[in-house]
Structure formats: structure tokens, C-alpha cells
Image 1 (tube, rainbow, N blue to C red):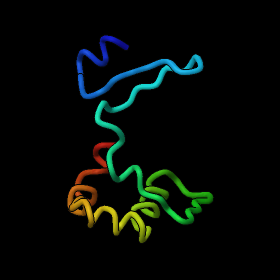
Image 2 (cartoon, rainbow, N blue to C red):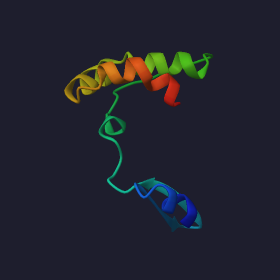
Image 3 (cartoon, helix red, strand yellow):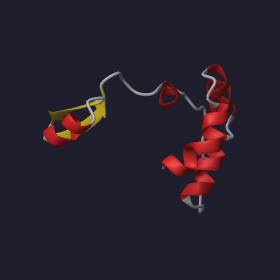
Image 4 (cartoon, helix red, strand yellow):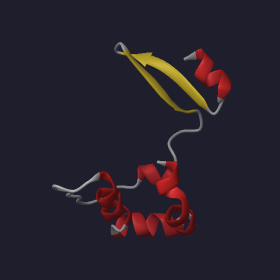
Length: 80
């Protein structure tokens, strides 16, 4: 874990209840803290579920508030 955080100091790690957690030093990215009222994804693959999630009104509004719409639509699938 030390090698990972040394290679990318934007991350830190800690052990809690015998579980190792690796997370950003500056907290979660703002978009990940978006509350979604209801989300169902049954019998679909990950790409389809991601499409549904990104098209939800809550995510649409939050990405607009954060000026992320162009970034997410153009590059998120390559990052995953």
C-alpha cells in the first residue's frame, strides 16, 4: 500500500476493522456524493446500467452544476 500511495500521493490508505481502504486524500469526487432517489437496473450489463445512471435527473443536474457534462459524455467510458 505504501508503494501505491508513494506512486500517486493523491491517495491514502487506512485499515479499519481488518479491511484496507484506499481513497482520495481530498475526499470523494463531488459527483459520487450525488443522492439518487431511486435506481433499478435488472438484467442489463454494466454499460447499460451506467447509461441509466448517467441519464438520471439527479446525475444530469449534478454534472451540470459541476460543469462535468462534456467530460463525462466524452471520456468516462474510457476511464472505467
